[in-house]
Length: 153
Image 1 (cartoon, rainbow, N blue to C red):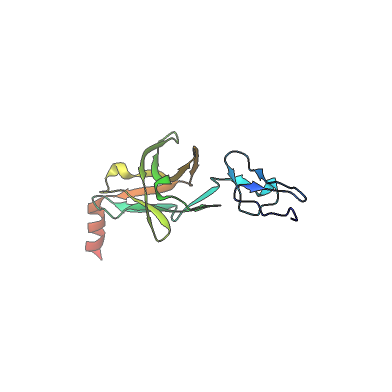
Image 2: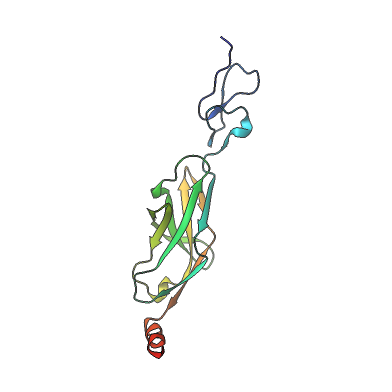
């Protein structure tokens, strides 16, 4: 027995070690890791909005925010991603679960009204750690303004 055994997930062993060491709480590693540096935050997540701002038409339903969510290790769970409106003081409110389509997470705003306007973020929550995207600004255009523009053309 050479004493060289590959460590399993969430453990590591340094050169010459004869056993595997568990990663610290809340950290994970791939099988075969060789140092504590290989242990990373399990929730290392990057969230990128697909658009920084958008204009939606009042009364229409075609208005949704979309983000890509990438996790360093493991799969992003759909139920871990929500869309939230930012209050004037930067707090999250009215968070609603998002849906996944073609690798992106989106949330429809439903029937657009003047109150739909504002800043929104995508939020990923897992194991008590929240990661928030950059804000996405939604502008709302009155329905009749759009009609008058079409008539003039």
